[in-house]
Amino acid sequence: MPARNDNTAVGEAEDQGAAMLSLYERALPVVFGYLADRCGDRATAEDLTSETFLAAVAAVKAPGPPAVSIAWLVGVARHKLVDHWRRRGRHDRLVDRAATEVTGPEDPWEHELDRLRSDAVLAGLGGHHRAVLTLRYVDGLPVGEVAEVLDRSVHATEALLSRAKAAFRRAYVVEGADDA
Image (cartoon, rainbow, N blue to C red; front, side, top):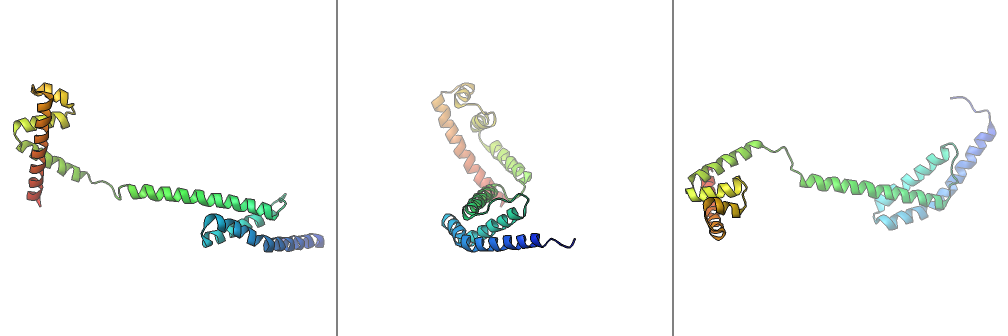
């Protein structure tokens, strides 16, 4: 680091430091009050106040420094507060998304076992129940088309479908109890 021979530059830097310290003492309650009123959390207000003054020091050290005043510091504090709320919103959205996602990779074996169990239950049902359930839920036909295929009225098909679902549920529970 080269030695400084220019005493006026050091004197100006010292004057700048003293002016900044004086501004800090006057602005601290204003900036902190501004932030504390808006964020409602003392620790967050303290952190944002620190960030505000660190930004001011960095701005003063940069070439072509701005005219730092209490109003300018409050403007910086406002930007720091906006940045804080954005980070917090992003964090909250990530937490919400993580809470709703599956915690681990899905095990395809569970689906396969369920499919095999369902096939076994379906095979154990009577032919008319098996037909109506297969047409409606495996083939995905609407009830009206299922009625046409089975040569029944829509009302009779809906009743048959209802009885078939009940029979399937009963058999599925029994099948599951046998596996346990």
